[in-house]
Length: 115
Length: 115
Image (cartoon, rainbow over all chains, first blue to last red):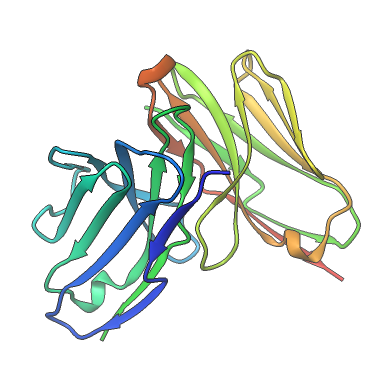
């Protein structure tokens, strides 16, 4: 089946530093990938839609300069949390849409803790 | 506004018992409906996906139903196991054909299976 690898699974960083999260589709191509944020006991909240070869589309209220997205290939999208603050601590999840059958596969998530 | 409502919000059942989770949606135009299982601290894993013409689909002990007329879906879990403890998320995709990708997430049902 379709597999999406997301790394790292956990990261702790200091305030003011930047953190990069990778989302990689292992056995299919994904022109479109999505980045979500999930607070404890809450549903996934779409942050942005990542499109290979073009700029990401951000949801209302999401700072594009804060959350940099790069989708440089058909199998890789990255989310960089810049100048991280404790309030950025959260669970970040990516998903990739299969170009062939339009199925969605989620990554296993990244737990970010900013101290 | 597209919405997906799930019930109950949480559910506790004894191991070995059956249970049914509900999902009502107002997404239009409807493309497909998916049920995901999300373990704590992990990304969602797909259980079933149904299009407009499908009214039931099984995946092991999981059986999903869809009534496109009433815009309702259910997920039935048979002979529950402790490992079934997780959040179950109903996700409805908007759009038509190849262009669909707008997803609307339910808030999930948290299932706890106890010995």
